Image (cartoon, rainbow, N blue to C red):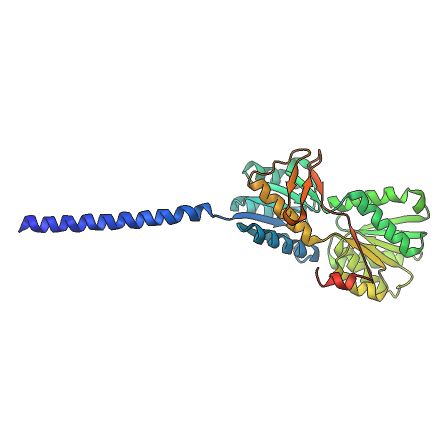
Length: 345
């Protein structure tokens, strides 16, 4: 009797062990594919939250993620456009062990130490729109060619004011990499014979904050009675300047131009404060930057001089010796097309 009980117990034990083995085998079998399917986490760090340009870039990032299929986007940025705020965010992303960081820098040099740290931890760091100095990133994706952007803005201002008169620049922050490069190109353009009758009288900074940009624009208008145009190479600044011209009842006397979003600028075009402005498609920019980051994570891009990197529906981009690439030339918007594009971004 005792032997029969022992045998039954042993049989039950062997059955339980077999069942456990089957359960574990099934679990492991399902766990391995799940682990292999872990998504690539790409963080998009923008200059500041609540900026329409970067909201549109985020839409492009989400489009790329959906197309690639195995990407999660973390969209973040400081509440005000400071390098300190971005440094704090990047440090947090390092702790989260994201796979890639795509960032539009508030300061080209201040971010280098923290982004170097990120790269040392295996995180792929790319800058877009406003670049990080070469040592702090694998590549920089410029929205367009800097010279074309500079000349375009001067040409639009010249067309608006009849080729002669005083102009001023309302920029973002004094440290913004892209703004400073474009301003430098604008000054080069003003040295050309065709723009010799245009005089740059001031450059002010609104820090990409609507209220401060508005105050700076009001200051320009009230301090310079002969001012003919305000050029704002920032979507926040051009919107604020357009409002300032209307509020000061200077429509038809002072014109605003620069880089803006059609959805924000349509009203200013209709008011007459703006004859034309330009921008590239921020959706395309966010899409291409995200797609490029994915290529780096997957080992399909290294950031070498002359390297071509696939960016999905945008084709491919080619890196220069500085690790930079340009996406597309700026496009002009005016009364003939602004409403059409305002429905898009």
